[in-house]
Image (cartoon, rainbow, N blue to C red):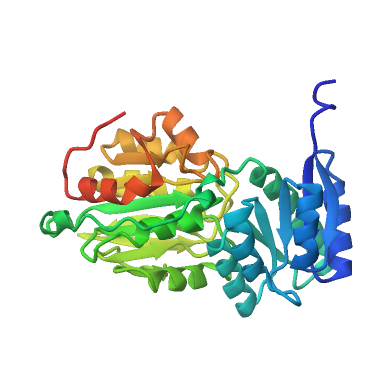
Length: 358
């Protein structure tokens, strides 16, 4: 009885296409835990609907008349933070604006099917339903505060020059694009090589890497088969492909491959972390950022068991405290750290300085 009385997640659907609005509305209402309480054809109507209906989550198209989704988010999030899922077209332009939307406060995104619409639509709607449920639990308190980047702790520069054999492995999912950006923009050019898995579909990871690269001292790029892991470079796993580490002689290289989903994902943090445990060992540093689920938790435990240093983002600074929570509770992460303190913590660990354990 209690389960039946559970409050439904209230959703507002914003899209300039009446057909798309109707399809999304019908698809979401199929789930007994969701209820579309309103639809809007542009941000001006959406603004009034938010005030009148107070939805829990909003789905938002980014390319609309009168005001695009990016500008809408930039006005909305500082004043009325709410979970927003972008529903985007998978085009070069669509990718650019979707990433801009994530930078402006959107929590996650999903792509409209381009080919085989009849077959792709049920899959898209199923993913959207799940992402809305995750989004409804998000912590958006950070949007109520001014975000000022923390300057890199440059006093470790001399020590870092001696640590070229270290590898920093980062995993993230929901809310991770902003967290990754915040960490990477603080890294000095002599930082040990960094490898990153962010749950993301194909067509977006290169644009994401290129965009983050513009704001970093280090080089950030989408990983390619055989890339060397080198100081001053961060490699982002390509969407829909696994990335792992291999040691060839005295070099660490990445291996990019297809394969079954692991922990429900491809790329999977678990794949990266397990390879780090096997090939990097005590030279590894594992970081688990915001995200839903448990991907990478067992792999991080394997890293810690072979002597890697490991940390997880804390609950207060996580948009979704799922992956970091599991990684800490299962013993994989030795300490929890606020996002703003992760860059300085990594600098200390990379320099071989002692860091307090939990």
